[in-house]
Image (tube, rainbow, N blue to C red; front, side):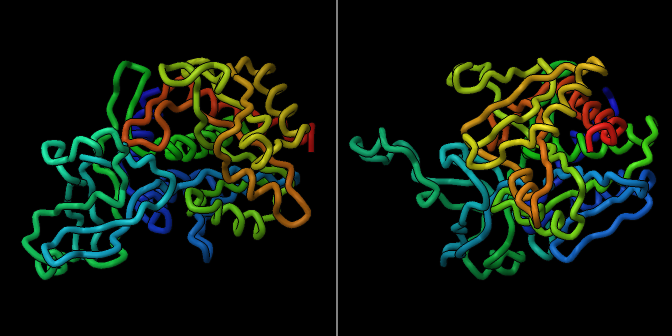
Length: 351
């Protein structure tokens, strides 16, 4: 458990906006290079770590990117306007501290807006939009902001550290999908311990939050016989959401996807679902079945590649997704990684 918590903390605290995943790539390289035969970065930026073996070949995909912002314009007074990269709910952005990743150094700023004292009465009940917000880095003017390295296109991420709430419950930014990356890394280490003769490609994908882009290109290149995407999923166990919206609970084990995005995304291959579920039962790994009508994952892009790749998704239940305070139970993280690893040892029974 300590090893998993330490790895998750390291991944969560690192910064990697979609298209700017370099720091996460470095961690993936460092963690996996001793457990694979080959590791490389492809043209798109995906990290592909391969343990060579026989057929069937298996792809384990976990997206490395996080949602964030990007500098769009610096005004004459040095305030920065931004665009959202990925799926933000605007209200979570207001009053956040952020990191601007310039070519010179990382600098800090805060997201501001009109204070409530001067908002007109008729506007007080209106939702605050990102277009009404700006980033203050303490600069006196545009020239000073530019001298510090800020320019149009500077990537921006949330400044938030991963913390333990209890012995098992942790909170931090970018658990979507650093939890999935953590699962992939830990699973590859467990595969090395358990022993397996099949070919396994562990892929840290890029730009999932903006269109499942890295998954498309890496799956096309590798053309595996079967694939598993590791990600986070929304539980229905806290105020503001009901079990009818999501039957998943934090602390009840990994989630095996049957359908996501109400079928507009992935309808998991039935043999993959059977493989994962039977492995979980055989190895006494706690699991839940997940049918969602919201978002989707890299699995959608992978299963549509070439003539089709049998694909499934295993997820860690994460509360408050796409916010700076995502929350999970480390036991669910461990169960997800163990299911992936154990499934690799049984894959030749099914494919």
